[in-house]
Length: 286
Image (cartoon, rainbow, N blue to C red; front, top):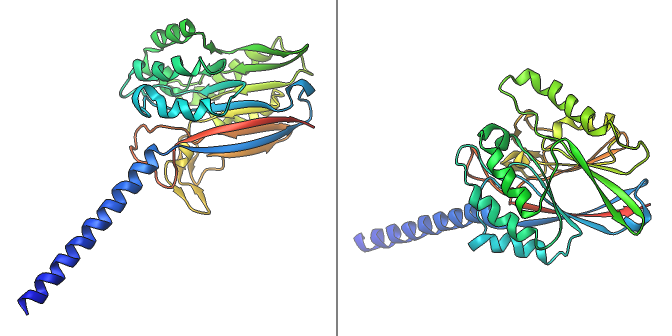
């Protein structure tokens, strides 16, 4: 009888250890196994020369490392042969600021394609963005601080604009700040031009649409951090529980917004059913 009890105890221990290993592997993969989301967007105003234009969308790295010198992340981007790479904020994390890890990725990404970047709330909150901005500009990144750049292909062009994150310690000032930024960006833009906006916060989509942007790229919400299968993200800053704009593609009036679930973590260290994401967007001219 004691022998049977010992065998039972051993089997139970093996099962418990097995379950713990499976859970640990699951958690590790949820934070480190990059997923690629592929989107094709039909855009009526897109110039014909930009048909098939490929954009890699990166957001919310938060100092995370993906292999030595970010080689795993870089490899996933390089194989896609993008026309441009865009970064929609939070390259660093204000709570554990590490400029070097962020620049490891940027210095490799710029070798693949032109890089366009806007700030997130963590850059603005860190109080150290001036140093990071200098390094980004030095590396050749287009740092879009309430301004725009023109991209040309054989005589046709599109506009890529960027809005600073409206972070302020006075929370009810943020709607006023983003309005000022959008006014500043659009004051010299031709109304009929095809306009892309990079802006960290997706919940401002109705304001972006009001200013006539055709396509918007955002991040910020980490996909809800924890995603419930068939339901979506659990909670997103500035949107609360079960947010409407946590990931994917949405249409408001004549504006399409694409929201990245991001790559890293900040306050909450673990993703669940929400692997790090790279978005590959192909623009199609109707």
